Amino acid sequence: MATGKEIADLLHEMVDRDMAFMHICGTHEAAIARSGLRSLLPARLRIVMGPGCPVCITPQGEIDAALDLVEKDCIIATYGDLLRVPGSKGSMESCGGDIRVVQGVHKAVGIADKTDREVVFISVGFETTAPTVAATILAHPPENFSILSCHRIVPPAMKWLLEQGEAKLNGFMLPGHVCTIMGYEEYEQFPVPQVVAGFEPDDILLGLLMLVRQVKEGTHRVDNAYPRAVSREGNVKAKKVMYEVFEPFDVEWRGFPVIPGSGLRLKKEFEQYDAQKKFDIVFRQISKHSACICDKVLRGIAQPSDCKLFAKVCSPRTPVGPCMVSHEGACKIWHQYQLKKP
Ligand code: SF4
Image 1: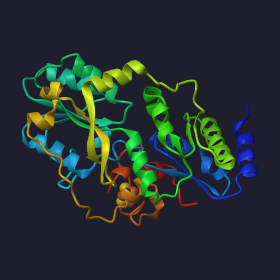
Image 2: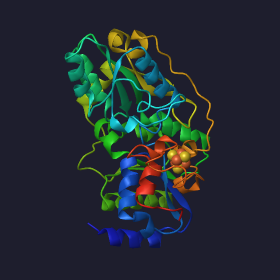
Image 3: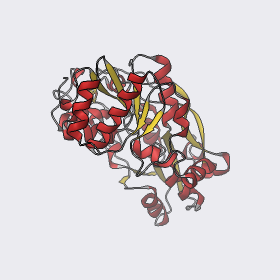
Image 4: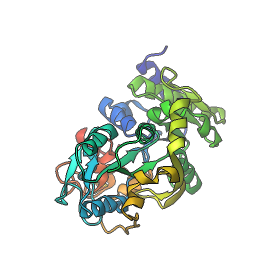
């Protein structure tokens, strides 16, 4: 197998036109930034960040819904990354409620086991995390436990991005973690070059090489540069469990309008665990009133350093938008590695 240096040299020989490939995974962005991989690439080859951070794409209305649950005296169990994400009326960190940081849904159930109060798990994540939550629901957690489902699924967002065409993409680097669960069969519907890539710099370079080859051949298919973890059909059991408990529905993403079939909500037979139904909570759409351009960063039409607040008003200590809060957020990653626009 060729080394990373050899692949980079090949890319320099092969890239003879402008090409832009979007990844949809915060872990890819972190690996690219940490390794300085962009500096090895031909100037005409761009890696564009997409909506690959599940915390970042959680819209203000869903953060507000979590705060509504605080007002109903629920204990909120959430991932640490969500704590400082701003809604329209503050964040979970600043709301003064009983907020518990947990590492996963099983810890939230553990809290419910030890109290008579209502415990709500703020359930964010792509297809990578939804099966674990589904398995927890199937195991019949206590009656005082419920989830606020903020899950999203990736392919409908890709469909939206391709239909809009504003990011002018030549193809996608598919999210390796999501594909571990889902496989890549469902991505074959998209008429653009795609590759499933792992997270080592050499994995990413190999993925880019496969994408460039497809562009130059004038073809499109899904190549797999991560066969040690991903198969075409994915984890069939995990997918079955996920769709036994959840069903797709139309939902807004931060920076995007409502995308048909892009969210996951609990099916009717599990509604006793649905915090929205249990506490009569609605997700409101909130208009943006800020100079933050997370919306554009998430749609792949701006980079963090295009934001006039980047590293000035907005930093990991004083985040203005979610992309500076989450460890998978593009702004936080760029701030950490002091990246500027190439
Ligand atoms: Fe938003 Fe801050 Fe990123 Fe600007 S730097 S886009 S304000 S998160």
